Image (cartoon, rainbow, N blue to C red; front, side):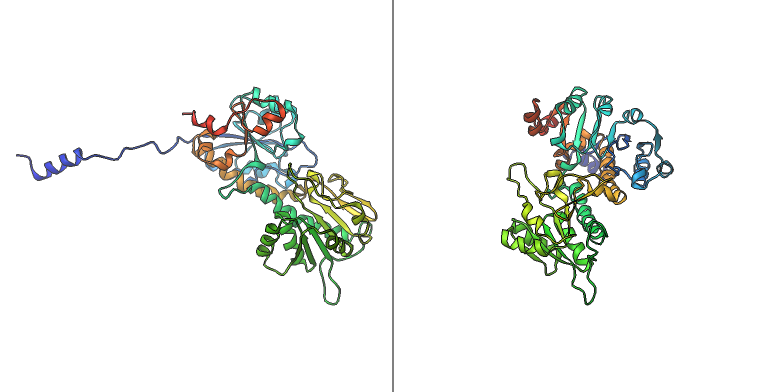
Length: 404
């Protein structure tokens, strides 16, 4: 006769059990390459030394091109101390599994793209040619534009970080030129007792406008914000939590504000399908002599009729006695801060890709990163690119669904 203990063990074995499914991925060790920037106006780098240290600790190999972080204040020796390999040429960096660069890859770098490689950079879609996409397609590589990567609240984390930096930086730039003996009128942007504070007008109530307004208020100047979106104006007031003057873009109200302004920040973000609004030249000519315009949206055509793009090495010009600062890449002026902001995003992303066994597995579980993919294994996945440049395109979700 079977004992009570034996009967219990047999019963346990016969009981139905939950099906055990594969829930994890085999981790992979990645070879990550960081290219040096070839654009003279780009000073940022995608990974800081601290981020490299985290990646090396996670058993990944990191290749840094010589002087890639120099303009951001990160010397090669600091990267080396964190475990990176410092390599002198872009050809060596292009052997990595994943290649990062702030600006898009140039023709020489594209020629070395290899099959199944992952490229992460900005895209700047409307400045591209068909050949740029064709080279990535022909090499069967995957490309992600970081400006299109979304997070779990449907915002664009890298664009937001750069916009926050730009909003703060733009006001400091304006303050410098406003007090300048040649380009300004000797006015201190911040207020002091007994002296009327400077007046700042911000056109655009997005992230740039919000952080610019915070900075202006912190410096003791007065600020007025204009936008045609009541929702954005209300959100800005709620976020800043101070009594701040706001208005829609009504010509008479705007003209009064412009005449009294010491600084105007143009931060209107234009959508492709929306008619672009610009501050007319006659309004600019009515400003105080020595006043300053900072046109943050110059890369989208600008906010003022009198604006045209400038460079970091020659950032300002004057028209109607008004100083115009129209550098498209303001965040690059504070490259150390901006590079750390990039690293805060890229380091966890790369570690996550390694933990899930590669980018294909990671993309299946991250809708936000999928939004940044425009070519996957040589197949165009953005309809805007396919239609504009004559490529067949496929839905990325369908492509990932057939992968095992």
